[in-house]
Length: 124
Image (cartoon, rainbow, N blue to C red):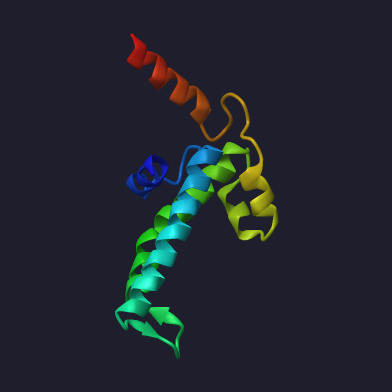
């Protein structure tokens, strides 16, 4: 859940890098929340069968659209690719599961190193 909230807080950050865990936990919680919104729409009669959309699901989808794009771009940066690679079907999924480049690359420092440094600073 923490990764999901981090992505929402970084909704307008299209630079830097995102770890696999940040990307995939966001995807997991986004999927679960989408199911919850759909069930809520159906339960309360807010689902339109003609369009296939519900009110809450549509609002939720619009709210997480920009953060989802931002984390996907940062994920591409972690593997050393341009953010435009999110537009290439299948290959972007391969890149999303690929481990990030160890150490700094042209898009910023390694997010694993940043997390390790933050953890070590808490021990002091």
